[in-house]
Image 1: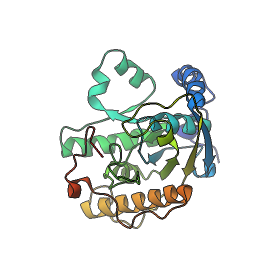
Image 2: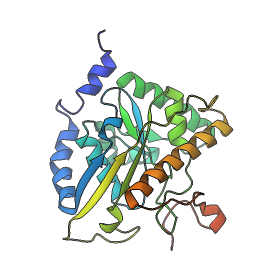
Image 3: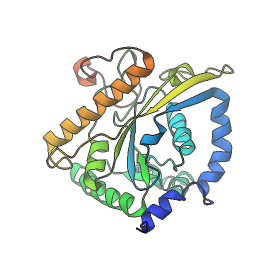
Amino acid sequence: MARSAAHRRASTEKTRPSVFWVLAVVVVPLVGLFAKIRIEGAENLPQEGAYVVAPNHNSEFDPLIVAVAVWRLGRAPRFMAKESLFRVPVLGWALRATGMVPVARSSSAASAKQTLQTSAELVERGRGVIVYPEGTLTRDPDLWPMRGKTGAVRLAAAGGIPLIPFAHWGVQEIMPRYGKLRFPRRREVTVVVGEPIDLGDLAGAQTSPAGLAQGTTRLMDALARLVGAVRGAEPPAERWNPASHRQTETGRFES
């Protein structure tokens, strides 16, 4: 059977000339000065079609690690970015040129509508997107994945797109949470690509609050297990909840 146009586009997104190649020439060697990236579970990232990658977040440096890992696995790394950033001169152009995905934060209705639109576009174009389910750097004092937000699950469920937990460990040795870069020592970073999260049994997962919550719990538990396997430690039974510890979920904080 002939492959769809979307699949043909997806399978050539790294091999054809693009803005990503220009960025890769700069970013990949730069990240290589700081990190030796080891990837496990590469077979779990689809080589064709849309997907949602959901990484843990414990360092301001880890988006670069995630981007380079996704690029090495043959896909173009595209992130969800705040809609306001697309209106910034130069930066907005760069975000649009690389196909980054704007996310609306103005209202739940606007967010839900944009999720459906974004999912449809990802499926049509056969593209992947990277969504941090925690929404910010983890507040957990031991750097375990904390309570997740529903965005990644909502996006994946709305389009029937594979939801891929994407764990990493070691980046905090390069740049501690809200800390400074440690250089010139090169650190080993392990990236583990998990198996897709099954959302098929969650009725109305893209719209039902209960379905979204259950799917997000499933995602964060899987992500914590992957991080625990890399660390050689057992993750906590419950995810850290900033609200229970009187912590804000945006901006910097004192641990």
